[in-house]
Length: 85
Length: 112
Image (cartoon, rainbow over all chains, first blue to last red; front, side, top):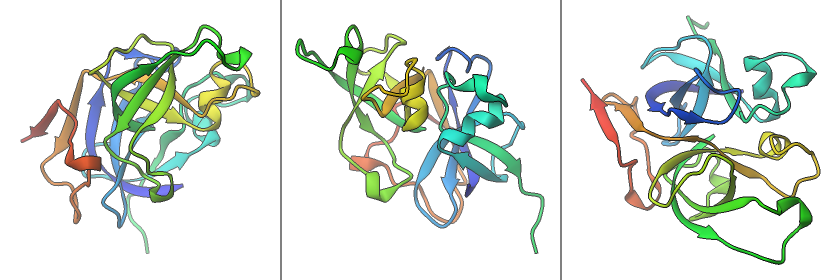
């Protein structure tokens, strides 16, 4: 998982099947001047610190189980960080 | 996923059978999250009908392959969304984002 901060949002009406209604967030990677686009199911807001699951496991955030293989998703917000110690 | 702009299209008559009937687009990425993968352009399969000049979200790796119905596709990038608008927050954290080639997404609307 990648730790990051929500820095923006991408709006798209034409999306791949299975992504309809999903929000796309721009997540800035912690400590780097880079960002990735991640699907959000947790309603993360701008400025919030999040963890993003990346790779083929990310689609499990959207839809669990073995029948999700057609989902076109390689990054999904899997938790919103409240605090850490 | 990464954000990029469609800058061209690739046609080929001789290709892997799995790519028959697939539209291949040349994408210029705005940003990469993995420096080791950073490249000026990449080729992605498109099933959504994106056109040249449009901004798209591109899914990389295994999910891109599987979305085409098989794990044996010779594909590692697929268009998963055609972008209407990009909003970037005015406060981008400690470090501003670096866009490849100094280009930012066209619909950059900074939110108040």
